[in-house]
Length: 81
Image (cartoon, rainbow, N blue to C red; front, top):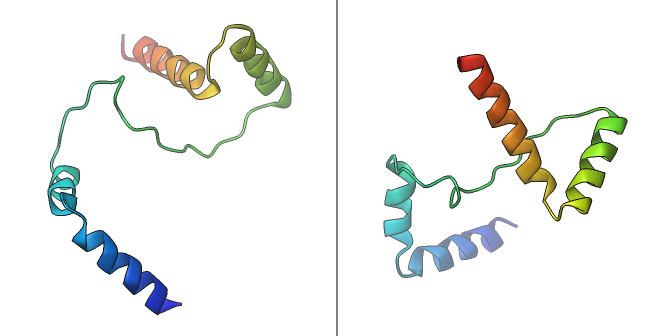
């Protein structure tokens, strides 16, 4: 199995711009919120909360992750003020 991963590493190393991309990852770059990458957040919520959230998202053409992100940001803003 290690040879498979070594081969993938070699392929990625040959991609043009890969080294430049690594430099950007290591530097602090301010990315507008609309272009910021999403990251998984493993957590649990009550079943009724999840159902309400999914129903609201579906009825309003929104994504669950967007609604959760907005709710968390609003709560943090409230705590900071």
